[in-house]
Length: 131
Image (cartoon, rainbow, N blue to C red; front, side, top):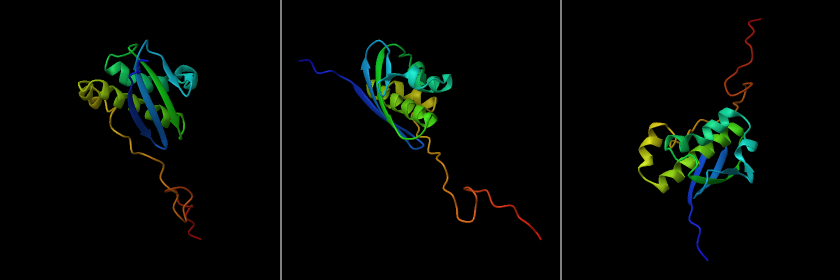
């Protein structure tokens, strides 16, 4: 029995994390068992997900299998994008410079700031009254 070869990458964004497997194939992107167009109907999220494949000109050359957990759709799409980019680097090191120039390998560390005591949100203070 032939061992199937695949390349892995892990991506994180906000509170979402994605485990990505890249296999040579016809370009199908499956996220949690569903086609990615069905899982992410918004065009902007779809564009973010396929951006690493477009930048490295590998659209249609790899099948992508993703397991994603946590966060919302924006965080998840960003995590998937980073996971695909990291998997592409493990496929071929020469992709690294193009992915790095487009900011696809850098972890976006922005996350929701915690609420502080005495404030309504992280920074919003109650309205000041003089009298």
